[in-house]
Image (cartoon, rainbow, N blue to C red; front, side, top):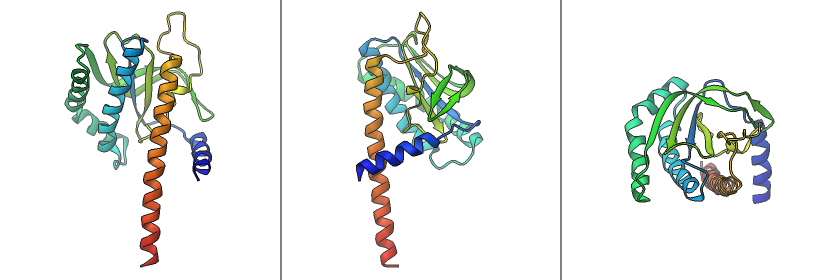
Length: 198
């Protein structure tokens, strides 16, 4: 059953295309050290969990942008709490608006380099590999960060991920996919039982 699920998910991923009106989430780590990359992933999980709850039932880009903007203080607080929990005294910035992205390829689609609406969280110096997904429509269970269509320059300017962070993000992403599958499977089972007695 899980093999069939993986096959179906793979086919679905190939058909995913980011709409023109989308809001991305981009998190830049302080550096490519193992510790800084781990901090990036923890911030990612906390922020994404909050925002997913805020936008999951919204229908329009404008609604989503308004809701995220209204929660900027909450996002700043979430990042600060995560840093405090890790006993880190690191500066960070949180900005919502136009942001530059490198060329990416995902599911057979090439997304050209350009300026896109995004929530950008920069940790420390922001010189480490970044992670990104699409907040609205909610697509953060798909890992668009794996789809670099260009090589990093000689300074490694956020165009690719380190092997360590790539493998860890891939593992985390699979865990999320399995969770989504279990939730969907339970909901389908409940609907089937209800149908039997209706």
